[in-house]
Structures are given as C-alpha cells and as structure tokens.
Image (cartoon, rainbow, N blue to C red; front, side):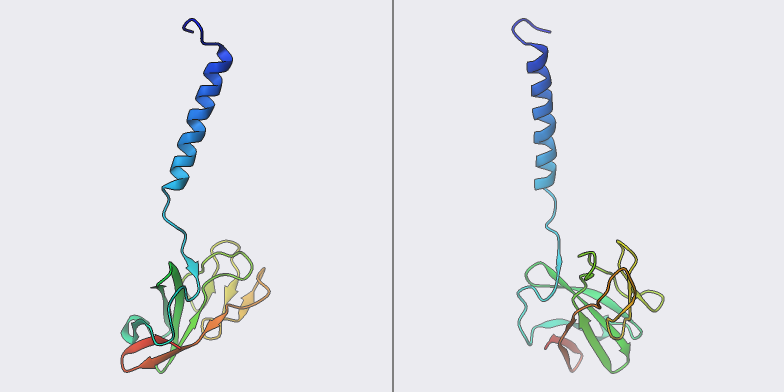
Length: 140
C-alpha cells in the first residue's frame, strides 16, 4: 500500500464506494406502479372497449403512476379491479387460463368477480366502478 494509507483506510474506502454504487442504482430505478385509480377522476377514459378481450382482461395505466385491471367476462360486461393482491401487495396480471394469479404466492382470483379462489389471500380484489360509453371504458 502507498505510504500514509492504512489497510483500514483502504477497506473503508472500498466499502464506501460499493455502498455509493448500490444507492445510485436504487435511485435510478423506475418508480413502482401501484394499483388503484391514481389521480384519475370519474368519467376519465381508461381504454377502448376493443382493448379488453371478451373472456380476458388487460392492465391499463392511469394518471398518478397507477394501474387498473379491466376484465370482460361477457360481451356486454366490463369490470375493473385494483390489481393489488390483498395478501402480498403485489400487482396481479390479467386473467390467464380462466383465473387471475398473484405472481408472489400464487393466490388465484375469479376474473368475473375478483373473489379469491385459492389462498394464501383471504380476500378478493377490490372492485373499482367503471362504465362504458360507446366504445370507451370510463372510470365510474
């Protein structure tokens, strides 16, 4: 080691550099989207009706860095749910294979009602009111 630098000083400097790099990486990550209506207001357009497949669903971005899960169990029925799993606080995805599944602990939910089908979640997804107007899905 160069004169005047102790082993302790070198190790502290290395640790500080590693910590600084880690914090910089954390600070540059994109903000995590949350489930819910964000800053959207009743009447705001969420999606086109054609964007929500019959028998399926889609996650839509809403103002305020949030997302909603729109599902269309029947041709003339559209529902919205806060996609936050009530057990794991993880965002669920659209229905697949007839169920909505939490990626964290594999809880499953009914895509037509949001009700829990299999835990560990003990409650269903929170429904959010929506309406349709022409070919648009609007926040209710």
